Image 1 (cartoon, helix red, strand yellow):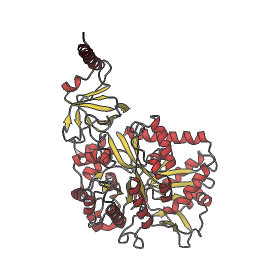
Image 2 (cartoon, helix red, strand yellow):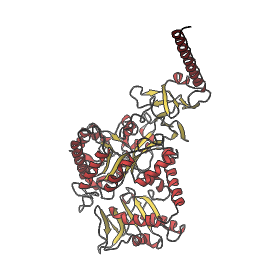
Image 3 (cartoon, one colour):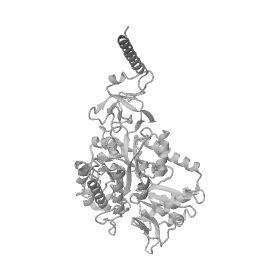
Length: 576
């Protein structure tokens, strides 16, 4: 046999071996089967190429096939786990596009004040907590809202209580209770003493200490005025042993992740984390300890961003469990605390137009840095003046960087936008990261702040924003609101208040729009639509299974639906 024939023979033999090996591998794969199959369901994929299916197959952390029961059964092998959906609805895992992950975990370890009917009940809760605490231990709580109390405290300023009743039951324990919005707080005398706050303490830039007629603090602090109190809290924690700090952080994250997964949330956009906290998240993502996926907005000052920003461009690390993609800023405060920055005074507080919490020049410099570092800029703006100023800053940055196509910068909340500015969202490609549940939570008192005209024209204006071409990414702002997407979905499609009335229902979303706002639009708002937000081959197997079909059942029944399964990366992380 000459060399040429020998070469041909060897080549043919190698090809035959490869073909046989391939057939054996395919056979073995089919015998083994994929890891997980969902059958016999109604699967809404949010994928235009195949909007609905009965079943899907998952191998590893990815979806590999979506189709009919008959088609997907061919992927079942000896090692395949099979879930019979029994006709239940499966959808892409919910993406909460604005929440506070660490704060959610901490809130589950503090006094939950959202259900308190009045300030007297809060005082009673603090009294009980003091009795069960060590002397000098901080008493923390969250979720109170004066507009939701059944009676006005006496004495009060603008419905806000004086601290004396609280201080009387906690003389030796500092008390710090965060408002539901997170933009104001109540502190007792001991907390103010530790923070060095007296009648002579000036209001900081972007903050306000509420005072009585003689100039003495009543215990209420708006926006940036709360910083000395939280500094005092951190100082009290400074002597904790490293292992104690580590155990606390892990507990917080464990609680937050469990809460998200129990509500069907597979991805959260964490609206503000320090470099230190991001380092901790990186450790947990690398070890697989966090089941929910985190997309992080950096919350650091300009000098820190300039010095260290390039170190934190994490993109899909920890098996797609951690992305650092945005920079968080706050141009104003909250509507509930009279901190949202308005063009015209509040109807119920004519002396105030709210607060600009960060100087415009600093905001412009942050925008320049965001462009330079390649981050999305995510600015908290609630009032119409706050939104206008933010859009102006964005527009200037876009004009100065014409080569930066499709930056997908975001405005977080966008609750009250002047009618002239609504079309700018769609025209500029600015994402409105809004929270459907805020409309129904704020609805009973928002017109009191803004008046009927402003409320009707420009507050929580989802329909007008969508009609402008804007993308709305939905969420809850948890722990400001419950992380529950179903309550938010219901609010988005009904705008129904607790008393049964409808809050400007012409601004409702359709159910299809609401589902997209909680799935593919959330992915788009983070440049992640290529890997999540819909159920299609090649995408991450992040899936939520519900007990009821929220796309067809009577709207009033939506809040009664339950999460049956939460699947992230092909793993069942919650099962009812």
